[in-house]
Amino acid sequence: MSLIVQKYGGTSVGSVERIQTVAQRVSKAVKAGNSVVVVVSAMGKTTDGLVKLAHEISRTPNRREMDMLLSTGEQVTIALLSMALQEIGQPAISMTGAQVGIVTEAHHTRARILHIETQRLERHLQEGKVVVVAGFQGISSTEALEITTLGRGGSDTSAVALAAALRADFCEIYTDVPGILTTDPRLVPEAQLMDEITCDEMLELASLGAKVLHPRAVEIARNYSMPLVVRSSWSDQPGTWVTSKKQQERSLVNLEIARPVDAIEFDANQTKIALLRVPDKPGVAARLFGEIAHQKVDVDLIIQSIHDGNSNDIAFTVMTPILKKAEAVAAAIAPVLRSNPTKLDEAEVLVEQNIAKVSIAGAGMIGRPGVAAKMFATLAEAGVNIQMISTSEVKVSCVVDETDCEKAVSSLVKAFDITTSPLPPSSISPSSSPVRGVALDMNQARLAIRNVPDKPGMAAKLFGLLAEHNVSVDMIIQSQRCHIIDGAPRRDIAFTVARLDAESTQLLLQEAALEYGWGEVVLDSAIAKVSVVGAGMVGQPGVAAKMFEALAQNKINIQMIATSEIKISCVVEQEQGIKALQVIHEAFGLAGSEKFVVPA
Ligand code: ASP
Ligand code: MG
Image (cartoon, rainbow, N blue to C red; front, side, top):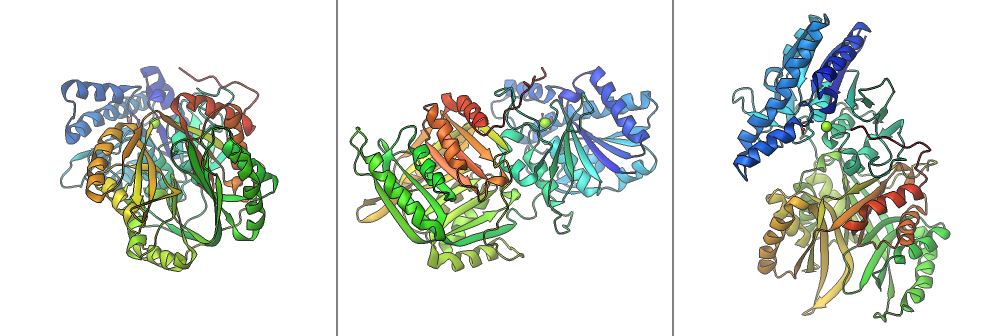
C-alpha cells in the first residue's frame, strides 16, 4: 500500500465528463489499496478567463484581489470532483489551500511555499477518504489567512510540495500529453516520448518543460528526492519518470525558499580562447567548432555576446591539457575568417592560459533575480574581476583570473552558506545520446548595455538593480570584447528577460546608465532562444559543433551563445526560431518514426 499524490491539470478536468473519468481513475487507485491525495487545477481555461475579466476592469489589477479571484477556479474543481467521487461510492472531501494549511510567503500572485500542515489532511486519509486539494493556492499565515497563489501553472508545485510534506511514495502528474517529449510536438510532430529524464536536465529544459511541468515542482522533487511521473490522463501508458539522486534529508520548513544555491563548483585548470572580430554571419561558429570537434577537443563554456558592427567575438574555454590542439585549430581557422570579402578589421585569436571557471549551481535560482546579483556582488567584494559570464537556468558561471580562484570560491561558499565542499569538475561517463531534448523560448527579449567599465562590482550593480525591481534575468552574457575608452577598459553585457518586462527594464537601465556612465542600452524584442540539453554532453566533443552546423546549413545566424555543462543555448532572430528548433531536433536524431498528434 502506497501513499500517492495525483495531480490533474486543467484539460484533464475540463468538463463534467472528464471530471467523472478522473474520479474513476482515482477510485481505481484506492481500490488497488493506496491512500490518495488529489490536487486539481481550475477547469479548462478558467484561470485565463478570470485574468481576462480582471483586465477588463483594471490595467494593473491589485495583486491581492487577483489572488482572491484566481483561487476561485480551483475551488470549483475540488467540489465537483469530490461529488463525482462520492457518486461512485468513494468517500472524499475537498479542501482549499487554507483549510489544509499550505502556508506561503506573503507575495501575492507569486508566493513560494513555506510549509504545509499535514494533520487535518492525514486525519481524513486515515478515515479512508480521498482528499481533494485545490492546487495553486495557499495562505500567507495561519492567522492572517490572506489567500495567495503560487504563480501560473502552480498546481504542479502544490502537488509535489504536498507529496514531500506527506512523505508520499510518489507523485503522479496527469496531463493531456503522454509524458515529456524531446521537444514541443506542435512544432515538431516527430517529437519522441522519453521514458525518463533527470530533474537536472528537466530544469535546464524549463522553457520546453514548463508547459508540461512547473519548474518549481521539479525543484522540490529534486530537493526532496520525490519520484515524479508525468502521464496522460486519457490512457494507461507509463509516462515519463522524472528522477533524482537521493539527497540529504532536508527540513520541511521553508520548503521552497531554503537555499537558492546548493553547490559551488570550480575548475582552476581552464584556458580561454577568444576569436576576435569574426564576421557576424551564419556558419562561422559551425566552422570553428567543427574543426575543434575534429580534433576531439571538448570545449566547456562557449560565449558569444551581441555583435559589434558587423563582427562578433566568440570565446570558449577548454581544459588546459588539450589547449595545444585547440590553439592550433583556432590559429588555423583565423586566416579563413580573415579572407572574408567584407573586409573586416583583422580577425585575431587570443589565448589566455591562466583562467578559472567558478560556478554557482542550484534549482532554487529559477525566478529569483537576486541570486546571480549576489554572486557578482560577492566576487566584487572579494576584489575579483569577472572576465566572462555565462548562465543557464540553474547555473551561473564566471571566468576569472586563475589567481583569484581560491578567493572567489571561499567567498562564495561563505555568502551562500554552503556546507558541502566545493566541487572540482566531475567526470560523467558519456552516454549514447548526448542531447535529450531541444527547447525554444519565444517570449524573451534581449537587452544589452554597451561599454560597461571592466572592473569589479559592475555586474553586481547592474543585476542588483534588476533584482531590486524584481526583474528575472534568464541568459546573462558578458562578452570578451574590450574597448578602451578614456584609457579604461569597457565591455558589453547582454542578457535576456521576459518580453513583458523588456521596455520597463530598458527605461530603468537608461537611468542607471546615465548615473554610472555606462553606454547605450539596446533592446531587441524579436529574438528566440533555442537550447539543447543533456547530461551526456559532458566530455563529448562535437555537440556544440553539430548544433551550430545545423543552424549554419539553414542560414540561421547565431546572435548570442551561452552554455552550462549540460546545456547550449543560442539566441537567433525570432522569425527563425521555429526553424532553428526543427533543424536542431533533426540533427541530433531525436525524431521518432511516428507523428505525434497534439490533442485539441
Ligand atoms: N489554474 C492555474 C493556472 O492556470 C494553476 C494551474 O493550472 O496549475 O495557471
Ligand atoms: Mg499546468
